[in-house]
Length: 188
Length: 188
DNA sequence: CTCCTTCGTGGCAGTCTCTGCCACACGGCA
DNA sequence: TGCCGTGTGGCAGAGACTGCCACGAAGGAG
Image (cartoon, rainbow over all chains, first blue to last red; front, side):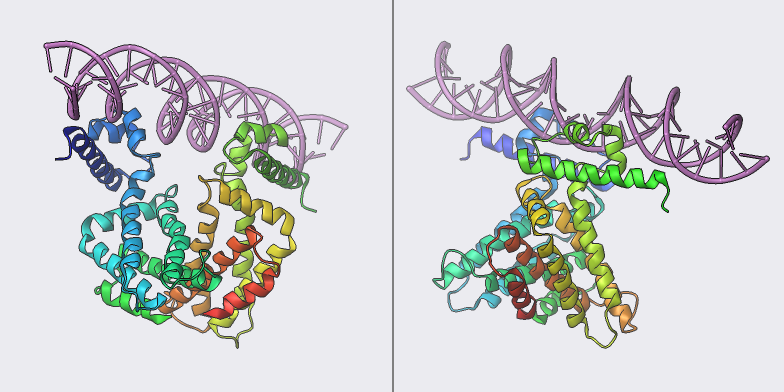
């Protein structure tokens, strides 16, 4: 058992994310104040900032989860695959996950795209992981701690391609998102 | 003649950017308040926000100039080059420009990298131009208004690679930055 | 040169995000 | 049951940013 305390906390946190997403989708990111979110989630503003470092991080949290998943998948890949294939599979998996949660994810990404102030940071968290991922890929084949620029460039390129797909997906431009993702990741 | 009014304005604006960069480099981005910058640049805070939508945009401005330059170069490219070559030349030119202004640019990029709050947005302006650039490339060869995903992915990939180089440059990791840039852009 | 229009500037008050501090209460534990 | 520790909420305050208004300086017409 997890302890009543932690369960309460987790519940309050999740409720806050839900309330925030709901309100953002309804009124737009900047029209919703932290106080509004707190009222809807029944917590005090002071507590909000204990859960999330900033207002924008309510949105970053789910994206962060995806990024963590990406890193995990990279690390768990069978050792006989080359970098490119490892990354391709990991991104494909994250893509599947996003498509599976289509509803909330779509809302999330659209909110992010429309929120001038926040548009940057969640995608950026992907970028923060570029170096980490390149490091894991290098370590996998026993390379040096500092990944060489080729590896970093390859990772950056694939993530950039993935972001283009994300963009398309958020705008619901395509009927077969996973098919498109496969094409994009294979395109080179 | 440009009119006294506009010259005064341009001068005050430039002085503000200089003062801000100076202070940021000295004390760090978040320790410097807008009021500090205004005191150093001899303008009122209210005026600061007329020049720049937000504190962070003082940093974004120079990067924005580079991005504009990039777009210009793309548009001015000879018509017989293919997309990839056009983009390669344009990025190479921007790279040269950055290396030439090494001092201020180095300061700028290092400030940006260290300022948690702002780290994201200036690079993002590059990303905002992805679609624009892809559009110009497509238009150049008489394609449709909406660039297809292949073009957008190619542009995104090259810009991502360029960002890796920028990162390296800002950290002064390499002795021959332009040589490295050529390798990175050719790497594919 | 003078008057009048126009537009940029600066000050003021107010909102919103975010932080440090402290008192309190509730869950965990003996 | 009673103590301890941690999470919570309230309060005050700093800093970013905005709408509003009054003033002054640039530019143009007579």
